[in-house]
Structures are given as C-alpha cells and as structure tokens.
Length: 228
Image (cartoon, rainbow, N blue to C red; front, side, top):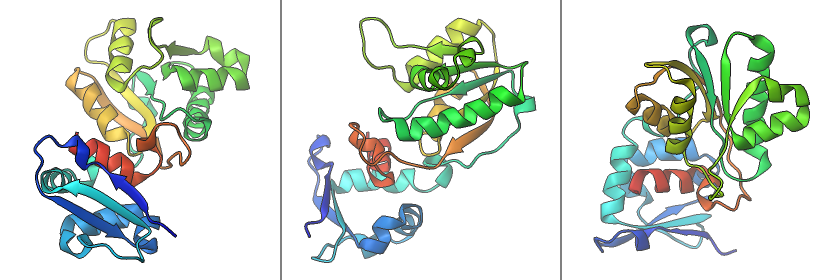
C-alpha cells in the first residue's frame, strides 16, 4: 500500500535542502504524541521506508519553523479551560467545510444557549445554520457572522473584525468555542485585537474527507500553521 504523501516543500521559496519525515502506522494514528516526540528528537523521524503509513516532504527551513512552533503545545493545541461566568460574550468559529466537526462545535454552543440567557452569542455562519436547522428558535438567540456578499469564505481574522464591529465595546471578555487545534490561532487573533479571552470550549477532532486538505488531520494542520 502506497504511503500518504504530504509535500509542502513547494511552498518554500528559499529552496533549502529537501528532507522526508517517515511515520509508521502507530505514529500516524497518535499525532499528538508523535508531535511531542518529534519536537524532542526529530532525527529519529528523518528517514522513510516501505513500512511508512505517511511521508512528509519539507525543506530544512520549514523543519526549523516547525520545531519552533512545536516547542510549546499551547502553540498548536488547547484544552478547554475557564468559565462562562467570566465572559461577556461567546464567540464560536467553524472548522472546514464539512458538517462533522462543525456539528460538534454547534453542540457546545447549544449547551451554552441552554445554560445562559445573559450572554450574547456570536457564531460563524456554518455554526449558526446548523443551530437554526436543529431549532428555529435558536435563530433569535444567536448573532450569526456571515461572509461578505461578494465572497464565499470568511477567515478567522475577518470573523473577529465583524464581531468587534457588531459589539462596539472596548476590551470585551470572550469565551471561545472552536476546534482545539484551531484554538491557538483564534485566541491569538482575538488578543491581538484587544479581546480578553477568559476561556474556551474546544472540539479535538478533524474532518478526514473535507475539501480543505489542511483540516483533514493533525499533521496537515500543523504543517500549514507552522510553516506559513
């Protein structure tokens, strides 16, 4: 069986030396532990053979960026933390195009909707649509953040921009809801814009058949985030 090939070397204009990281079945199936091990001893992964489940092709320049990114697990993945009572708002981000992970995120938002009536809840449009399909009354309780009429996509920074435009409040306190590996970027974008992130509730899943390749598994996501 041919290994899965993840080749990101073409995105490095520096044209530094090409290397291949080989992952066997156990490494591929346990991405979090594999990334921890790689950050401590990358040399043991810097070869490939016929037993590989996956081969990652990248440049030495990209590998250096990856190692910096992996130094602190909080750079690439967050566990749920904090308390809703400390927040003024809830802000939920979608993940990928498929329904699977976004449905799990919407279930967390639904739990919050049931739990509180005093918080304003803002959700990226995919999450809002899923909630409205489940219960039309939820449409009255959420603030949906849509993409612009001349686009078919809205990114993390644009979601935060639209959120801030809607609330017109300085230094808001926010509870994030997102995919766990997307959470560090969501948190950073919020904090860079003056939002105090007091906690978050996260879904630790990927979307293996998504049209967006980088949301299919942890390795693709980390390679994209670390080396861009």
